[in-house]
Amino acid sequence: MFDFLEGYDVLGAFWMTVKLTALSAVGSLIWGTLLAAMRVSPVPLMRGFGTAYVNIVRNIPLTVIILFSSLGLADIFGVTLGTDDFKSQGFRLAVLGFVAYTAAFVCEALRSGINTVPVGQAEAARAIGLGFSQTLRLIVLPQAFRSVIGPLANVLIALTKNTTVAAAIGVAEAAALMKTMIENEAQTLLIGAVFAFGFVVLTLPTGLILGWLSKRLAVKR
Image (cartoon, rainbow, N blue to C red; front, side, top):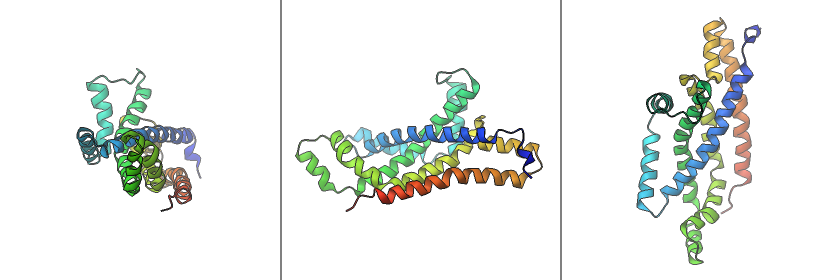
């Protein structure tokens, strides 16, 4: 029944999806946290940059960002990200595009978490001499992260599914292999079912585990 899978590296394609997701998730978390810090910063220039970045990037289709990462950065500006290998370059540019896009959603999730922290705690931190960065790092962000595990889980699941867009610039992840298989094999429904099941295997445990952590680590008010 599944003879059509012979000759295709399905596991390798999903492993590429996992690598895209993992690296993009780490980068998005770091950049998104910095953006969230900018959005609540007392410095108007930083607030303005953070607000403009989030509002602009969230309203640009992901496909446009990924294509710009490849055609714009690589072909026009000659950005190679330290490699001349076409496949490695495509992978790194795809990660860069996913980080730039997903960080905007991470930022907004974190900002909502920051808003749940009582203002009195920040005022108390300033009263004992802590600066803005110390208050954010030691008092506010630890509580904010605990309160937004659920929303961040949704962002991670969306990122996992969004990695299929990387096929547009030739990254050999799951969606790219599925397209090739559909073109070569007369088993469209079965091929679609196999890859749909693969994405369920990737995303369902993530949602369940992070949902459990969200309840376990929720800040008691």
